[in-house]
Image (tube, rainbow over all chains, first blue to last red; front, side):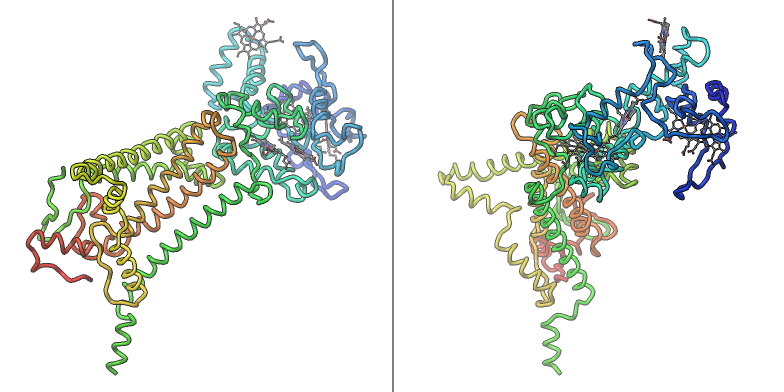
Length: 329
Length: 263
């Protein structure tokens, strides 16, 4: 395992960076950890990259002119289907066309540009999430590939490469947490005049099923990306090509084998209900009605139960008997 | 159809029949399905809590639990429909046919017959409610006297009809959402969601705190609720809750001399 990291690694970066204590407090007073967990790195999609693919320009120790990693740099790999040098340019391009670009159509910086996500806001060092969590059956699957791809780790690597993409590459819960970093933040929502869409989503059956471990119920991406489009092309609801534009909503609901038999009416369902009276009057008044009924019925009957118990506990304190006693005196 | 005696004597103690076998089979199916519904439904409402995740996983997780919930719901609603149809047939046989025979079949008479049904609130019930409140508020010393079915039972009976209708219709809409979208607008699912979730919460809380208190935890019943399992209730419970019927049954059995006073 250590072998494969260092083989892609001319300056033997891991030699130093495998030490857990490698850290310091930087000029801004932030704690910086320079330790690389080899096992995590090995189980990541980037394990085939050399450190220098991403950390360009580190040529000596101590390192000089360390640059921030740019996710769209070309790495030293060729993508087999097109035989071109691989990079994440297409993702960068999709992100630039999405609502998450910090530039507007005219190329001007939007308000609060620092609020717009970059690759690293949504992606921490990713790790493979194999489709098959069960190790023994995973090994059986890989053995099947090995019938033909017998040399080296090719079969294992490619198995991981493909099987992790047969479902969401990270769990829906994690996807939601990524969006929640910004979209559940009160200050953020106030700045951008958005509702707390994460709280409202968590209130729906979709959100609840995800919290209970479902992989099938839709997370944010399933509804906000047009089917077949790049996951990064999220658009505002008033953009005509958006997955949640009023004319496209029903198609989105019917996508991915979800509400296949539904008519356009299904799009009338509201996902991000905040129960504000002006925006969601029906929900507001229904909630109020049911809350009142619930409170009144329960408290009325609890009061009766309480009085009955009291009556049983102090049977002789009735008004007639008290009056009678007074008279006798 | 039930040939069992109204009064049963066991170990020199008297027990009074409250429910027939037929009624008890219905209530057992009902209780089991309601408990299953609550156990598979509450975790969804409280999905953010750890206990909900454990409970949901116990029933098979997000792929299985919803089906258990739907099955239990179907059974519960079926029992209610059965109960209603059974009652309607009985009502037709015993009352409408009678009116037809007497050639007095008018809307007014049907309503009159309907209002004389055992489960309908009548004058006596309002009187016993008033008596009961006077009693528990220490205004009078005389506890209210009840026939076979007391007003609380009747209230709960109506509450069940209301609850099952609201929860059942909303549940059906959420279950058959794609089909329902052919006839109703999508906002219906938002409404159904609120109806289902809140009415179900009310039902569960009412059942647990109020209904089960009356049936199981209240002092004269704790710890063994005889009525539910055997269909018979003890003499003291009978006196406490259904004094008027107690007197009637004792008199019918020729035991007037042994009638105990109301406590």
